[in-house]
Image (cartoon, rainbow, N blue to C red):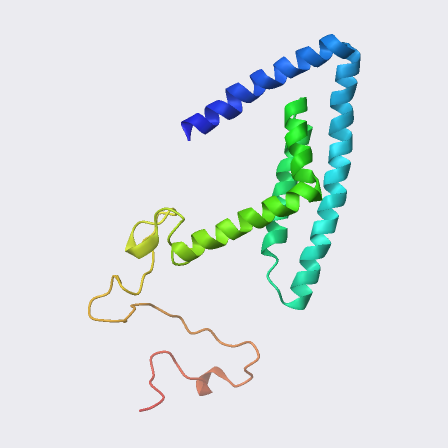
Length: 187
């Protein structure tokens, strides 16, 4: 994880600055600034149109009763593409355009979706791959997770709890004819 963060926060800006300086030397500084703004504006408009198209595909699949898994992955890729296109620089813009173009986005989304499916199946569902919380261990939210094989009850499937009986507002009977919490109606 440290290496990944190092690459993002150090290496990417160094590469971007190097490319911006080279382009600025070749085309001039104002032209380079104009190109950076142009790629951001065009990128955002393309993300918007592609996002609407992907949203319509999600709605069509939901209407047919199918799971829109790949389309959701494509939507996440479009969000990343939009972010990359807004970051000033030509390298991030190039990667953003690759994620934005359906010719490259759809196969990559299909690959990522299949990989996610295989991970879920290999881990036995969603509980296995998301850190603490499986098999009665501490969950990420600070509570003991529920697992049928490792219950925290003594002697079976009994849960202790309290309840309070509240009068139903639609019940027009006088309170004297209603069952009191302390009475057992079977006796």
